[in-house]
Length: 498
Image (cartoon, rainbow, N blue to C red; front, side, top):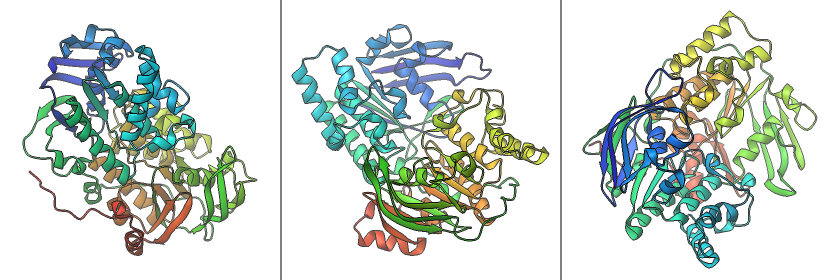
């Protein structure tokens, strides 16, 4: 089904090869999992197989790629799309329309399928990903996890011969993650298609006994057995030395965050309902809950990006309803769920140093700190690159490094571990732990219970916009168990290290 011979690729203007001497054959109906570090070339290989690398990017390619006999390098993208479906790492990168129904129908309409068949395929795909309730929604109103479900449904509806999933569950809660992998396995069995999954959450995939491939530095290799230490829990064991971080601004008395009977939402629809919480200095707060439960909305309220419909929000002593976001941001760092939403500069170095320059905190110390952070993030040789040339995981590391270069009291972080291999995830968490030790507070939306168990001091669990659990971390999982939310309990099974 897939043949790759001596394939190398270098993006225009880059001195290094994103892919080098890749050779691979995949038979019809195979289930292949591709793992290893962030930024090693996995997504570039996915773009190549889908034809996007040769139609939407400038670069130099060598070697051959064929899918079902089709020369992908030299074929129009619409011909490749008949054979290959690619669910990209960032679902927004592949949306073409404004609503869920239109998005799923778009590719089918371009194929000139009969209306009845389009509706049947749409219904089937939405059912497969358990997203029937999203049918009438606008894409802009969906959470990150909901967008990811729609992206998967869109590709499934096209029924290609090869399906490539680039971290298809990165934005999904544990329940949805297990469901999506079950869907992938079921589709492969019923449709007899070839499936390639790029993923760090390999413990979900072990039971399917796939063929394992690893990529390091743009080069591909196979290995027998199963990967060890590439799982959602392995990051908790990886700690790296932290660079010297600046002392935060004079910390205010507790609490840093105070919400009173907060109701908030969009277009008159309340997403959050009656949320009252206080967060003091030195807390590491994990925020968990199903996709669409209100986690991101909660963080947006804390920065003042979203104003309360009812109730009150105070952050670092400032009423968010009355205080400009620009002023709150001097004390509060925010990392969005989508890294592209906060990349402003034309080089990695300019991006990393933007905040201290804007806030009047630029000096020799912050310059040295920015250099150290980029080095640790694996971006030390990328200072002059445009941020959009980075991989998804590298962009996430740049986002956080840019926030660490000045001295906020509070960090609001929306799933910063997306796209991170265990080593890099552990590095980011160690940076944050150092900030908590210095007296700052961290509020981290995260779907991995093991991360919360290892690093957090407290858990906030949202359920349909309400705060279902607010407890110290050592008590929170017992409460989740009593609520029947077992998918959110720390993994305790034995792993086969192969």
